[in-house]
Length: 270
Image 1: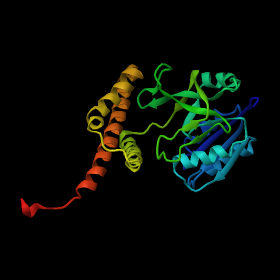
Image 2: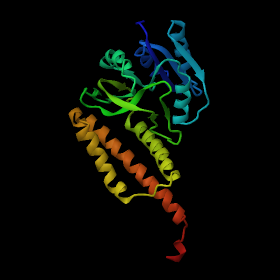
Image 3: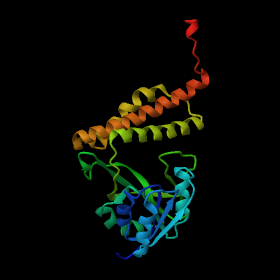
Image 4: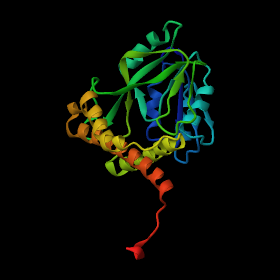
């Protein structure tokens, strides 16, 4: 165990015994690790207890599911250290990010948070190179200087109260290599949450997003984010993102269409 930083890592989980161990191992610099479980039925609780028994500074608690944003907000509120780091059970801090953490925590008082890049693990390739990463998201926040937007059903993020900077190096490593059979189910679930969120917010369908959104999404991932460097696994990853974009836009359109014209079998009139 290394010397501890004034940092609380917080994790929400459900049935993550196959992923959570390596996540915890990458957090050995944290003075506190808050893990909020929403009812795991696998070996998650036993895994966490094994780390507690070894002396890891883990606070493990149960909280009924509040939705992604609500669950993470609850976990954030349990943190006691000056800085708080949001990490998922299937993510790990890479070596450069671990090395950089002490500098990030010494940020000037007017900096309330840090955005961090994330590198996915691709089936048939492994983790993407350092130059190939997703856009940086706010993960490290001063306690009391940010909270989650509870209206967000998916892709929830911390809303900061002050200036946020980009971490100059380091990444979160995302390890959940799902076969397309499973990945498409995940994209279907997330696109439904996103579509419902948009419809509830009163946003109308946009034909240009249905037509141009998917190719633009692919272009951003494949060319701007650099997935072209990863061969066919990178192409598949970018195409999967385009599918998510299409499903979201199509579902928004159909939800509004059903309000205008409900389905009716009028075959006899034709």
